Image 1 (cartoon, one colour):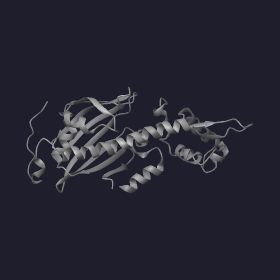
Image 2: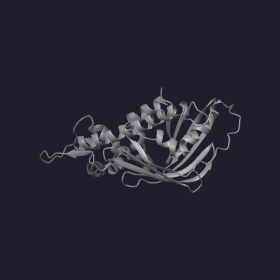
Image 3: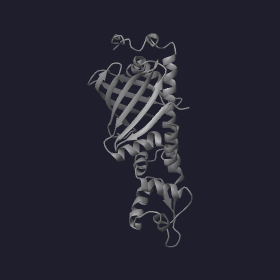
Image 4: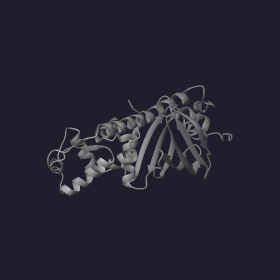
Length: 126
Length: 154
């Protein structure tokens, strides 16, 4: 997945562009159709579409004078994979930390101490 | 039930909280001692952290490198600004994916919560755009829906 993830994520940092993606998730649409729900000029929407296309998230085909836009599946999938990995990472990390803190690897048994007790000055280990 | 919460604050902050059954000093050490960090801060199955530099003192360096054993990897660097054992850590970090992400200024607090710990991580990004991109990468899932669901769990 060597697409430009930076460009994809900065494209997503804009609420209008997220809305455009949400609309395209329901199917192909022309610039006019995409502009409709927004209080925005068609050129402004075209500019957002250009950002999305450059980021690899949206693509278009030529149909006479129209250029209907649709989601670019490889780009969306690459990002989805990346996001799934990061979400899992965050959850997995803390689950692992729970296990580590509960396990014998915990070097000192301070968890038995009352919480008012001052923590011991631990020896510097490095 | 998820123990993780994630909220935005103002234009540039992200606040993550997580409860742990262990007391603050243990959770604090798990965030500052390389031999412990390497056991949990790993991401999904298959990833390891072969390089873990963590100099837990003001001005100390942080460098974590992750590998998945299939030739892929990325790294993070940072610097400690303040440490108050076992209550508070302030540091700056950025990722290299491989492009450098903007600096993330992070304050992590460890507070006693019964016999356990409430950890609060408050991240400050340089601007709203960076924060949005970070939410998209880290947690939002790129879609408002997943973000709303995440907030719902919270």
